[in-house]
Image (cartoon, chains in turn blue, green, red):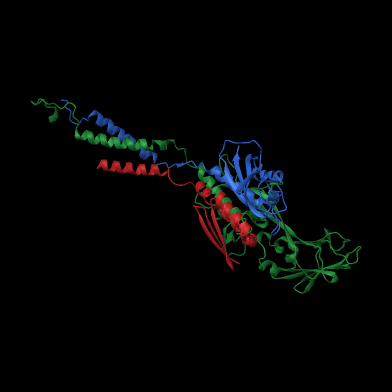
Amino acid sequence: MVTDSGQLYTIEGIAAAILMVTTVYLVLSTTSIFTPGDSHISDLQLEQLGNDALAMMDTPDHYLGQSELETEITRNQTDKFNATFTSYLNSTSTKNEKIYYNATIFFTNSSTGLQNAKFSSYDKFRTGREKMVRVTRFVRFDPPGTPLPGMDSRSQDVLLEVLLWRD
Amino acid sequence: MSRRDASSHDANDSGLLSIDFLAGFTIFMVAFIFVVTMASGLLVGLSSKSIDYDGVAYRTGVILVEDPGWTVDKKPSWEQVDQYHTDKIVRLGLALDKLTPNILSNSKVKRFFSTDPDLSYSGGDYNSKLVFGDYPYRFNISMWDINGSKYYDNLRPVGDQVPNNYGYIKRVVKIRQPGYAIITDPDGSTGSSIFTIDLNMDEIYHTTLTSPEYQPDPLDEGVNISISNFNLTTPGKINITSIQLWKDGTTIPPDLTFKVNGNSYLSYPDVGNKQVQIILDPAYLTAIQSDEYSRLSIIVNFDNVVSLSTPYKYLDAQQQQIFIPAALEVKVW
Amino acid sequence: MSFVICSSIFFLALLINESTLVGQSTAESVLDFPKHDIQEMKVDLYRDPANFTNSSFMGDFVNLSRERRNAIVRIDNNADRVIIHYNNGVTEYNETVLY
């Protein structure tokens, strides 16, 4: 004779089924551990590259000499800076990369305070879609030279700030 | 079940929720809320292997470029350790000194990239002294000369063939080359026809007057002296009559590698107002057994009186260094 | 009994699942550490200690560090030593150089 012993109520059954399925899914998904993709890797590579390039341009040839970067900033040689900096950034053994940059100089004016002036860029009107990275380096400005508009003509430390991005 | 009995009560049980239903439903709702909370995690980009390689490549790049390397006894430096004693090397690093990151030593670079089977390292060596980690990473390290657009010194990359997917880092470095010392306008109060240059190795190696990347290293890089702007008391032609090398008080017959203006010392060229360049190869210095404590003197005899102060200390000359910019690329997979 | 086991497995699975989403990745921690700033300061000091007795340089250096690099730098010039203090909010670095 068919009785109703051992039967589940419908909604009990559905609830129990969903609970068991969810638990099994969670347990199985933890057997293979994944880690979230690191989206900051390209930032790391770009920042390291920019810092290295500026540091190497700031290495003088003899003890207490003037480095290439100091000469370029004191005399406002933007073309030479462009040529050297892009060669350091872009030349590799496999294929040449395309990294764009925009350089600004920050200085302290004794009367008006902190100011900045545009120094150099890879291409006047280039903007990109990728994220950009900022690298900085302190450079000594020693007169006689070509001070940028707003700069004092005293011997001072200025900050070269370069924004880098890939195309 | 007693619930089902059609009893004599007027009230029936339709519409009632039982206790066990409530318990089950509560558990279900709690579990459901947890699952929904974690549903946003389903959309995170999950990948299992590529990020690790970039981290390892970065770390390897830092060790190569910013670390001078380390041996168990601290001396000799790791590039001078032969293939039978590689267990003394703790870390391989190419930097000139710990105070000069990104400035590499030429001898270390040559040793690292050497293809001589006697001098190259095994895979296990690289894993325990450079790449580190338990997983046997494969790597490819290359040094690219930026201005020459070729591999630095034509040294082939170290490591295996590169696949499509790898972790990567590029570091810009400068590799120190043998430089030269400039003596211009050697003027002195006493006119003399003998010019002496003192190379006191003890002073050169054991007093630190400058930053390590500008410190001269005659035993490894040789001696290259450039003298110009002679102040002649009697203007006219002057010639070099002889050149002598003194070491610790005794005269050493100069070798053919001792060059003046690119020519062998035996043909003393007409100096006049030109530049005299004296080059001593490091191999020659080793052959005459000079070490860090020797005192050498180069004595140049002219046939005319030149106003030169004697002796001139090598360390007083302006040491001009030559650095070659290069790009070190590390690929790990 | 089985309910207890089931719920404990569920809790552990939840823990492991959530753990993959937390933490700081390698690249983030490298980007946070001001390695280049500190190396540049040290290289400048080792190359020419006279830089840091020059008050106009020091004024510029400290000012620009604070404004553009978000780092507080203080350099103490004592008779026989120079002490550098650097703090950019995340990393603090102190160094004493005897010369």
